[in-house]
Length: 181
Image (cartoon, rainbow, N blue to C red; front, side, top):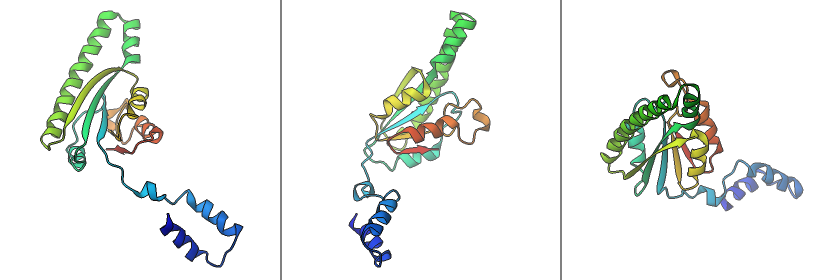
């Protein structure tokens, strides 16, 4: 932080004492510390997916290829609450059919992303999960260096989605760096 302290001192060289300290404290919210300026090595990346992701993004595969030695873990999450509602309102067979179709779609999506990553030499892992899309990502995020969120993640309208509210909330809630694509 010596560089920024020098900038502040030059800018406010005629101000002394407590006024300078107040200004420095006020600016500290906007100035990164030396530790924050150092780039952190990214070794593990979480890519959560769900039914609202309708196609693979070649651009994110290309972007993640920059992170050498990083492993991408793709996580397809089927909403457990919707599964329960279908089972309660219809029957167990309808719930099982819903789950089968979502897992089939998830397997296809994970295969496509896996091919995209492997064609660029990016090691990847895959998981499928029945759970809560937001809470499960927040729980698992602590084990990863970066989270990559599709812009329509957890959206009810994937065809007309600019950026879903859940993707924004997740990115804001994470302690790790996040990319929304």
